[in-house]
Length: 346
Image (cartoon, rainbow, N blue to C red; front, side):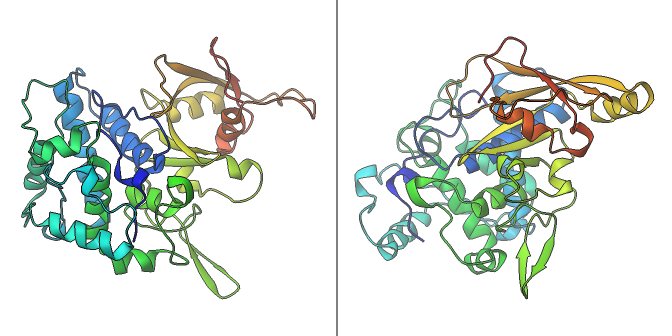
């Protein structure tokens, strides 16, 4: 498996608990870990401080690794030594050259975990933000996970691949293919691996048979975080019901080769459904976050469920893509979406 120079130079692992990246990167990996992080915020009632943010990030990464490899003793955490400069990375070499480079560097991380606590303790040493009070020596593994020009995201992806096993990952796929595809984009298989622990190729529930071929979708039920795709609104695919109704009210959003996150700050789904069933009217808020979009202001969408049908739209009307994606959730099929003064994303 060869990694492009874009896939190698992923930059700092996080910025005060939320990923903020620029450029062309495998955003599916970032969004999936971001989604796990958001689920931690929703499920745990803590005052959010930098230390809490880092602790939640450690938990999110550990959760992703454990979904891929439930046997903690088999988990590998890769850290590339800072002495291996970016100039040393054989980005123009063959996949074999890159595998040799990785193998040469991997011996620096000793694992043999016996518990999740040990795994998280190891990750905590690597996930150190530049804004923290912890001084990070420039030659430490933590510097490579956290510094702007470091190997943090690559180390995370390699940790997932080696923990689960390359051959197992190949069997997850419908057809063996690269995990990082043209232009450095993230494949659906890699996004699914980080999000669910399975590098499957589709987004429907379970396994579907088609022409004698088994097409594997989301194999985890219930889903810890969800998924919505703009492609479903074009009838190119159908996202599974499990992905639309995850345990935590967090959804990865896929639109035009880019993965982002939508979430609730408090899970009000059940209350809204009950109110709508009895009163015929209910409202709740969803929040949208693009970890690579340089987003500084909160985007809050107020969703109103009403038994009255949606107003007719002109054929040439420009409808925000989040509006139509939200309506792919069965309970929200007639949702009115108020952008609360923010310019809608078209």
